Image (cartoon, rainbow, N blue to C red; front, side):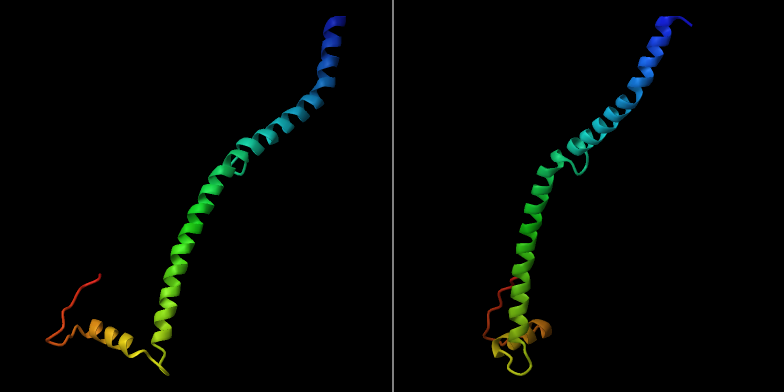
Length: 104
C-alpha cells in the first residue's frame, strides 16, 4: 500500500461521518420543503380550509333553517301555518280554490 492510498483512505474515513450527517440534514430539509406537510403544501391547506369554511357556512345555514322549522312544530305551541303546510304536503291534498306552485 502506498503512502498516497493510505492518506486517501484516512481522509475518506474522516469525511464519512460528516458526509452522513450532511446527507441526513439534507434529507430532512428537503422533506420539510417538499414533503406532504412541507412548505409547498401550505397553499393547498389554505385552499382546503377556505372550501371547508364555505361548506360549513352552507351547512350552518341549513341547520338554522331546520332549527326554525323544528321550533315552529313544537307540540306545545305549533305554528298553524306550518302544520297546515306539512299536512297538505304529506297527504297531497288541497282545497278546490287553491293554486299549487311546486317548489321542489
